Image (cartoon, rainbow, N blue to C red; front, side, top):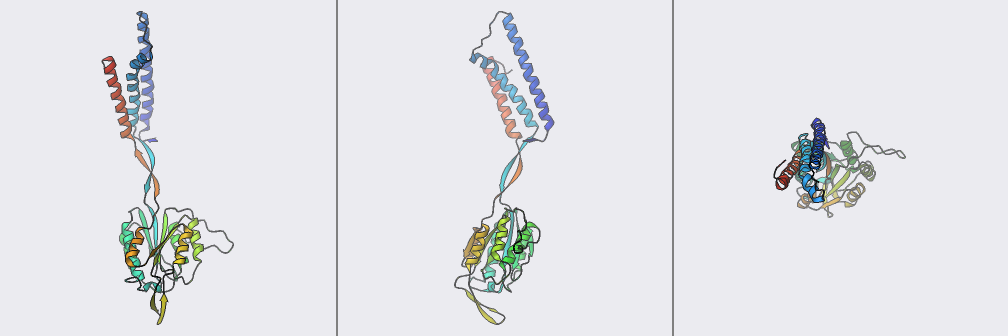
Amino acid sequence: MSFQQPLIVVVAVLVTVAAGWAYTLVQRRRTAAWTGAGFAPNRSRRAVLRRHLPYVLLLVALPVLLVGLARPQAEVAVPHRAGTVVLAFDVSNSMSATDVQPSRLGAAQAAANEFVAAQADSVDIGVLPFGDQALLTQAPTDDRQAVSAAIARLKPGGGTSLGQAILVALGAVVGKPVALPEAGAAAPSLGYWPSATIVVFSDGQETGGPDVEAAAELAAAAGVRIQTVGVGTARGATVEVDGYQLNTALDESLLSAVAQVSGGAYHAAGDAAALNDTTKSIDLRLTTEKEPLELTGPIAAAGLLLLVAGALLGLLWHGRFV
């Protein structure tokens, strides 16, 4: 507990000591006067309680009220749905497939926009499209219009490197470039970021790049969970790339493995409506932040309660407030 006016606490201590000393002195003089007059004071427990309790309550109320004036406050842990989310979008050629309408990428964009709109203002969101390479096109921000504009600019093309996407997303979280360690070398120290989440929208069609599971392990070591959203169908569809017809289908195995390694979850979605529902189930962490809670009101109320109780008992037992 801390006080915004600590000097009043010192005054409260001094006043309480002085009041207690004065009360003790008055009681001693009364006892001496009764004894000198030939009266023996009633020392039964009930008599002592009736004689002293009203005044004790009044004496206790005094420092409590003064402490209330000092504006005490305590730090309490308040839960917040806060943190950093990096939305990583697979923008490879296979995401132009139309087994999910209007396309895999279009359905992912629509679901992501709903996800963004549902987040609290305390959640910063970034946008990272990835194909053969990954590029953070919108750094994590609370500006929802900027995030939506970055999502709207996504266009399909190229291959898929999910491992590179994870590394770049981690870099956006920790604030520095992240790469896998060389063989036999120790993993880089990234700190611990339990309030950060990477959400990957992909069909799981990996074509190369850094080792995906090793990148996921690096994220797990940094406390960053990866939530994966499968976009597409097992039936698949055909897309045209450079004049060639290529069949592409949703591969859930890699997406599930990545989520499992990092402590996240894989969310399956077969069509646009299901994908929208899937993003609602993505779990963001609740963090706690210490916030000051002023205790003036409760302490002042307790002081007034003691004051009233002492005054009423004094009136009931002695016919006077003091």
